[in-house]
Length: 392
Ligand code: TGC
Ligand code: FAD
Image 1 (cartoon, rainbow, N blue to C red):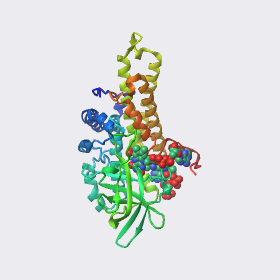
Image 2: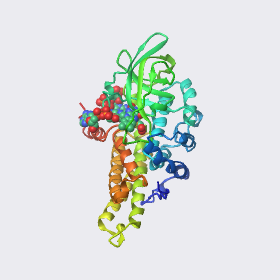
Image 3: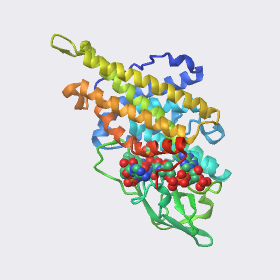
Image 4: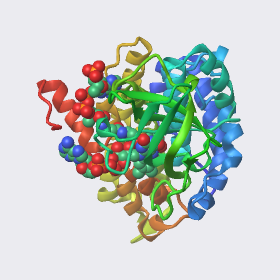
């Protein structure tokens, strides 16, 4: 892969709206990605391997639990810092950001918000350092967009719960030490359970042959009469709102992360267009290519402002789920559109692993699907503005 010459676009001087702490956190993540992710990520994606060697570094830049309080090992940062970290990591690769999103928002967050003090103390510090890696099991083979229909279930057996069912498309599953699993009790109420690797009847087969998110490990979570200790139930929230509350946090991070992927594609295409000579001049001098670049920087700037405002609302605990859906949908769509345009600007080189664009483009096909598809988020906005559900 080419050396990483990334220069972040900031067309509206948005850095001026960030605090010293935001800039420090963002720059540390940016430097780390350049040094530790860029040199290895292409090979990892080509080999379809999650690069476990970067787990310690992710922990050091605060990517595991950025907003989890320091007393539990988290970085104790605000929501904008969390977003900026996700942006920088996804500038490197969406699959690496996935690993961080799952660890922070889908594993640490529910343990922190819905767990007991004992559960927080037992799991959070180890998840923050990457000693434990986590996964989040909501999606099932027959229930993706409609998680409320899940059939994974647990029965009260007196001194333990007996868990049965299967989850699929689970990020980090093949190597996770713990899984936060959503299942129905005998009354059909959804609860979260912490399942640990090594529990009898629990297996995590890997899903192969993905063309997207190749540097992230994806797999299943299978439960065959797994005896889960009663103290592993997350007691402080139940119902579908519990897992959806975690998704709010992860979707918010994705709204920022997608900007990173878009910035990398734009920056790569801009540099290439200035250097590539056809018909006796740089292709950046042709109006059609300028249209692409001008529209890219316009859309990136709009997405940056959307994410920043959402971050301010999150910091004030005022962001609604529907606002988060709008930002996730808009920013991922913006990023995938830019990736496709940028890929074309590189001509044949656009499909080569020498450049990051095709990898981003393929990754974003997962990002636009997971954490609620593009269409599901549109329906969430539709419901919010009309008051009428078009889901069912
Ligand atoms: P509905 O009746 O609307 O709601 C059920 C209950 O949940 C509450 N609620 C929320 N709570 C918090 N945050 C949200 N975003 C919420 N949305 C809804 C709601 O108030 C209600 O509460 P209560 O107390 O009244 O019971 O539910 P529904 O069955 O009609 O479904 C709504 C729908 C379709 C929007 C929802 O199910 C949905 O978002 N579907 C998409 C599924 C999804 O996003 N799955 C993601 C799986 S995890 C993943 O992809 C990780 S990828 C990780 C990575 O690698 O980065
Ligand atoms: P379906 O729900 O079958 O949807 C198929 C199509 O139908 C979509 O276009 C959808 O928009 C459309 N559709 C569905 N319902 C409606 C409706 N009411 N109106 C209009 N259109 C509709 N899940 C986890 O729990 N944990 C993870 O860690 C995780 N990681 C993932 C990693 C990857 C790489 C991928 C690809 C997925 C991951 N997922 C994870 C699963 C992901 O959240 C689901 O794939 C996603 O929610 C969509 O579900 P589905 O694939 O079953 O599609």
